[in-house]
Amino acid sequence: MSIVLTHTYYLYEDSKEQLIMRPYAPLGLLYISGYLNAHKIKNEVYDTTFYSREDQLNFIRDKQPKVVAIYTNLMTKINVIKLIKVLKTDSSHGFPKLILGGPDITYNCENYLNTGVDFLIIGEGEQTTLELYNAIVNSKEHQNIAGIAYLENGVVKKTSPRVKMKDLSQLPLPNRKAIPVDKYLDTWKTHHGKSSMTVSTQRGCPYTCRWCSTAVYGQSYRRRPAEMVAAELGILKDTYQPDSIWFVDDVFTVSHKWIRSFCEQVHKQNAIIPFECITRAERLNDEVLQLLKDAGCYRIWIGAESGSQKIIDAMDRRVDVDVVKKAIQKTNALDIETGTFIMVGYPGENESDINETINYLKAANPTHFTITVAYPIKGTSLYNEIEDKITVQPNWETSTDRDIDFSRTYSRKFYDYAVRKIVNEVNYYKEKQNTKNLKKLANYKLKSTLAGVFMKLSK
Image: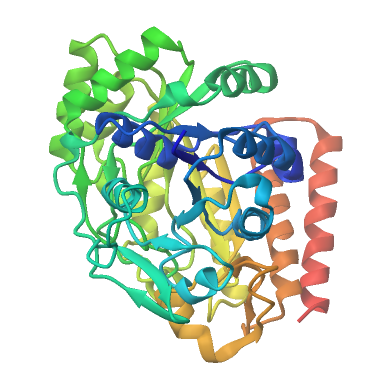
């Protein structure tokens, strides 16, 4: 085996995921594996999700690959660094050349190269991995390979940027056979009564949200032909029989023309599988909602981030909060579940904005909502905006961008309590509309009141 593709997400270490048990396959690595296969490059994927670090090291020792390519992101960075140090110091691994890729690479090149890794892949990985691998195994020059970074005499060198793949019809299907798909399906089935798989139809996002990273695919819009996506669904349906599909695209309905074609194709190819997706409110209308429902859509996540127009504008979301609210209400009316995302602690947010968010959630009434406290990812407009206001900048090797904090309107503790207040007050409201369980209502009300008191005390 000449190249092993791997990552460092271990489910047994993730206490939060163990509570929800909704793991998904490493789709990016599977796309690279499929691309290498199409070019006759023998490769193997070691998916660590259900295995341990020691299992992974034993696999690499056994295969003795010439190259190990590792995917890294915010969540896995610390483990990636640990793996690099072992592979660079333990001769039993044969000292393979180490390649890193992923969204955390682009704006942290020097830090990653200083861990001892040999090469970084900046941006999309398929073409660059192929060219770099061929250069390594054939002892050819790498300086002219687009989209890489490396150290030369202790100095970071970057080649010209890799031109993004324009025609995604040339992209082979992800190599799902390389991983234990059954483990994912069984885990979902055991904990939720139904299985789920992921599918990607597009790359890039044309929108400008200031907190969002576009480090890999850029601020673009490129899409696989609808008939190819429907064909992939047909293969998954025949091979794995998943109960549902999660489309991982940032804005699934960005193109109404594509949606019409997709919905036509899934019917034509008998490829309907219940699915959920993410989109923006202004890219939904009555026609699109009905098309999605007829094609099997059972849940739509509609981005909001805040119920305060002031904060939405500060984020450069370029949408009206009332448009978001009405889109959720219309989707609910079609008996499609809705989800929405909320972010608190954004620069300039105050208690009044949080109360507007609570009122928005009550009025919109999404089936599900998630809340995070804003954190600045390096390379984003948000990071550039708050860089001179950073109050907590932990050690890079042992922390992630999630651990960075900055001067906000109130303390970080305030926003942690704000999350609790929003959850409990909105859930209390929803229960009040739907149940006569007075004990449950009283519990929500107490939690909401206490969270409000803590918010006042923690300013």
